[in-house]
Length: 462
Image (spheres, rainbow, N blue to C red):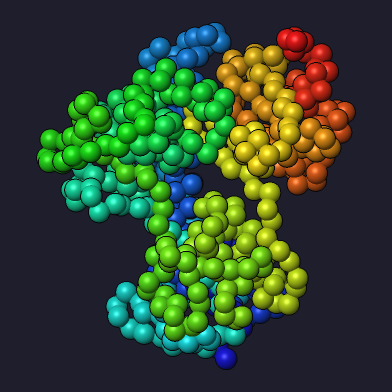
């Protein structure tokens, strides 16, 4: 046997799986056909948030007069922003390489294919093939941007990876898709002066989020100059050297570029899963049990490639560690309380059941909302837009879920995730002392609001 464990894919699920396997005393190899760190580190989460940080700093500087800091002549250099993004990515990717080396994980470059349940072939960029025997395999091949067949194939029709590779911004941008990726890129470009139009065929942007949260984000996006067109598809899309044109209902939509943000697709065909006896669903995603084990006992799958999974980097990381431990003989099941973060302007954080989901499931719930406008820290920082909200079971008072929209919502949601996972009640959370003045006080105030006992908010109307 060449290795005890082979991990296919070195993204945010794969490399933690390999490192954890090595920590458990296994002989481990990881196969990667592109860059260590995968999509998240190289062409997704990290580069996007690096550019968003630059764009947000530019916005704060432009709005600084309200806080007594006048930066009227502030300018930005997008090419330098992109260069910094590349530096950040390079450092983190190099860090992954060093971590794998330090833990004794062998990195094999190339594309993996199953030749049997415990036999793999890896074809490198030069066409050479290496054959590997493995006791167990963890599949962590992730996903790629979906590019529907009806779109014209043209350099002006791009997906997020190609957008991040550009060193200049267009004067105008059409975003196809009002989900997480589409709205994040729309906010980034608009903050830096690009005229942005978002077209979403569903009734609203960010449909997975509660309506009151969406309302805050939509209002801010429109205030930034973003045109939102929802409830109908973009049709008759054409592209030429001058730009991209499409039709939304009776309106012509034009832009220099069309950014396609309609979701992610998995590519499992090159793995030849049938040779290993691994079952998939109709979309080609892999079916697993609660411990990430596939229909073949020696093979596990994690992250985006798994049927029904939330396509989030931190989900892949958690499942990668779990799969490594289960493969080594431990008993564990996947975590079900998963926070989600959206880096729009303002930010969004969500965990557990939304109010709409809870009511849709027939649950009687109470909610507690507290606006950032009531917080001293938010007022001091000049960031008062948005709120936090608890969703609690009306009978037991158990916290079922939480949403935050506003300043640092993507950081604040971790506190709520711990509370939901720990099955705390609103009463227990409200009695937990929070430091003052902080943004996190909003959770304490909202927990009191569940019972109408919040002293820093007006009484509910009866």
